[in-house]
Amino acid sequence: MPSGSARQADLSPPRPAEAAADAATASPVKRRDAFFDNAKYLAIVLVAIGHAWEPLRDGSRTVTALYMLVYAFHMPAFIVISGYFSRSFDASPQRIKRLISGVVVPYVIFEVAYTLFTRWTDHAPDREISLLDPLYLTWFLAALFIWRLTTPIWKLVRRPLPLALAIAMLATLSPSIGNDLDLQRVLQFLPYFVLGLCLKPEHFRLVRRWKVRILAVPAFICALVVAYWAVPRMNYAWFFHRDSAEQLAAPDWYGPVMTLVTFGCSTVLVACFLAWVPARRMWFTALGAGTLYGYLLHGFVVQSAKPGHWYDPAWVHRPLGEVTVTLVAAAVMTVLCTPPVQRLFRFAMEPKLGWAFRRDAAELARNPAAVRR
Image 1 (cartoon, rainbow, N blue to C red):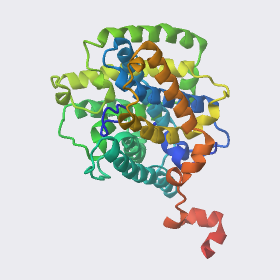
Image 2 (cartoon, rainbow, N blue to C red):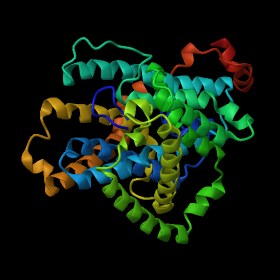
Image 3 (cartoon, rainbow, N blue to C red):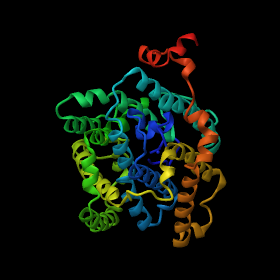
Image 4 (cartoon, helix red, strand yellow):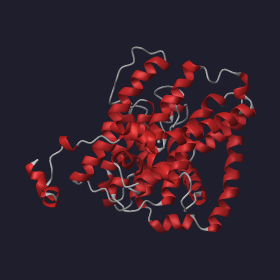
């Protein structure tokens, strides 16, 4: 999720807000899977590190190569997992309620909050609040809302993944899609969500086999070498999936081709990443339940770097400084995923909106006392 400017953003028992990030709302479970919580935590830490590396890219080919590598798979991995847990979304009243409370309401709150905050950090006092033009990190909530609503369609069609790829390819041909709900990014990232919908538990067990874990090592090394080679030769904005081919100063036919190329590369790297994710409970496993908190909140920290001049000292752009920035980014994201932070911001991420919805017949049958309320 690129964040060079305010408009360039690129994310326990199921809770509405976290369900927005990992689609746990689609299928309430009694016991969380440590593997997926570990994967979400590690992916969201990479999101924070990628944002922290952005000011360090100029003058460092190594940082830029690492940046390109991370951007090739960290959001695709997060979106694939979100799609996987959205498989049971059926647009029932209960699911829609959770979608509104866990996605729509946080989207509105953080869209307003980021607009007000970036008026200061970007010296743009006249920036308008627009709920149709996602600002900074809120694009993911807008995308998740659209993807989740269309889930029944993807479950109905015969070849969902090829269809989603075709839509993403066509999107790169149109620079006029506009900024409404960041549809360019919604459409170009769509195949990863649909891929998650198509996956089954045995696919995740397959990538966790020891042979795959071993093969993932040379695969990542090769990807890093290619990224280092490609830094002066390729526009890595293709991995941001937010622009058409024309907007990236490329011929139209590049768009569909690069859609397939980046999807293939990203899918392989996502598989390698998941192969390394531990399946057992770790010290950070519980933090996987708070990844949406970390995702939305860390943007305020990243934006504060501008007026704070955090990257001005020369030592920050040397190897020791780059390592320090990486560790600090990981630590900040870790803190933002912790239970105390979740409790503090639960009013925005997990609002209780029972008062706003009618109780459906099934709910009244389960709880007759609700009729009297």
